[in-house]
Image 1: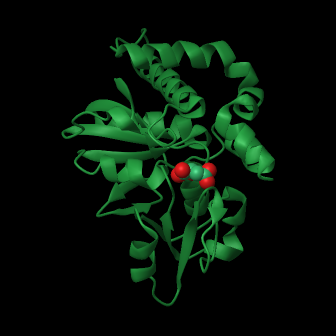
Image 2 (image 1 turned 180 degrees about the vertical axis):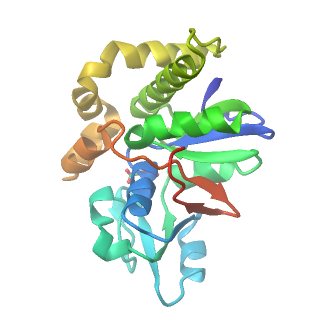
Length: 240
Ligand code: MLT
C-alpha cells in the first residue's frame, strides 16, 4: 500500500486508488449517497458543474468553504439530507476533493473514502485485489492531517480485515508515508474528534461556523457503503 499526498501523486494507473478528503468533500459525497442520492458527479470547475445542470439535478460544492452563488447546496455533509437528495443526481465541485478524484482518473478502480466508511472501504479494497494507493487530497497542495489519519485508519481496518479472513497477521507492505500515517492514527485513535478540531482545516471550518461538520466527519464507520467512481460518477455500492 502506498499512501500519497495529492500534490505528489505518482502514476496511479493499474492501481486501486482510495481518494480521501475528510474535511469535507468525500464525507459529503458519501453522506449524499447514504441518504439516497441516485449518483454524485464530481467535476473540477464551477462552469463544468453549471453546464451539466438539467432539471432534477442539484448543484453542490464550495469555494473558500462557502456555498457557490446560484448552487443548491454547499459542501456541508449536514445539508445532504434525504429530503434534499433522495433519488437526485448531485453535481459537485470542491476546491481539493474533486480535483483529487480527477487526478486518480487513470486508476483501475477509484474508491471514495473517509472516516465515515473506513471499514467498508477496507473491505472493498481487499475485494478488488490490486496494488493500492491511498490518495490524500490535502489542501492547496499541502498535507492535511485529517486525510493522513484517515489513510492510517483505513490501513488499520484493512489489516484487521485481512487478519480476520486468513486467521493470521496480514503481510502488507507500506511505503514510509503509509507507515507513518498508520502509526499516527494508532496514536490518536481515541482522540480523533479533538485532533480533527485542532488541525488547520478543523480550526478553519470551526471559525467559519462549521464545527458541527467537523464533529460529524470525525465519526468512524457510521456508513456501510464504499462507492466507486465509474464513468465519472459515484454510485452507492454497499459493503460486501
Ligand atoms: C475541498 O474539497 O477543498 C474541501 O472539501 C473544502 C471544504 O471543506 O469545504
